[in-house]
Image 1: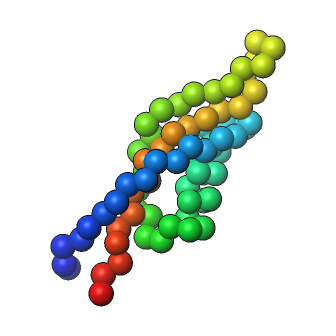
Image 2: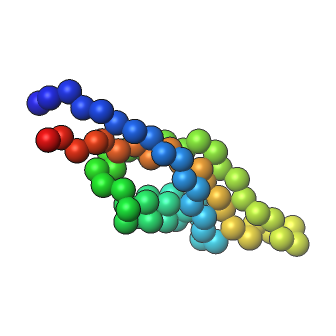
Length: 70
C-alpha cells in the first residue's frame, strides 16, 4: 500500500424527512461528480421553521475523498 493524498469538500444536504435523509442526499449527490469518497463528518445541523414547525433539515458535511493513484 502506498501513501495516499486526500481532499475534503464542504456540502450541505437538505431534507423534509430528517437529518439522516439530508446526509444521504448530500453524499449521493456529491458521489455523482466526485470519485473515491471515503468518509464524511457532520459539521453543522440546522433547519428551517415555518409556522412554528420544522419545515426541513439542513446538514453541513465535510466529505473526504482520495486522489487516484497512478
